[in-house]
Image (cartoon, rainbow, N blue to C red):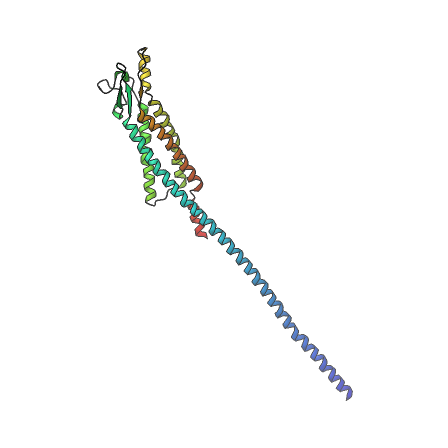
Length: 257
């Protein structure tokens, strides 16, 4: 009986140890699971913070680009307004053709108005002196067509801008840079015609020794200078459009953000 009692006590002791070990296993598993969940939360929080920083950086970039585009649009609008005024003045000066001519006989200066109907000499026209016999300004008609086209096209682009109709950047760049050689052509031609080159042809043709007559078409000289200024405005507009006219890309980035 004593042996049985000892055996029963030993069994009870072993059973208690086994029960303690069994109860400690779920506690360790629960602790590990809690640590894993905490680690996952930290990783998720770090990822979320990085995404927030990326979104803020993209939003800041979009805002900067939007501000640059607004500034570029305002500058381009101002340049086109100034260019429209210049082209209007060029056309007025070109078609009026005011200047002065020194009469060969008495040396007095006479006012001239070489309008479009006088760009080719007509012997029946008493307003032109005889020394204008070689007056054939065929290039002036081409120059007038160029300046009229540039005036109306620039005005049309401004009208589209005021109506809120967007124009592609490539179209604006092609127009701005494409107008540069034409304005330079007008500049060179007007500066040449403003010196009255037909007088030299007349004196050379008739072998006249007295070539003291002077002539200057000041209106065409001013038109040439304004054409050069207009050329500079076209170049400025093209450069601004090329480097800052990226509104479509900005709108797409803003939509993504």
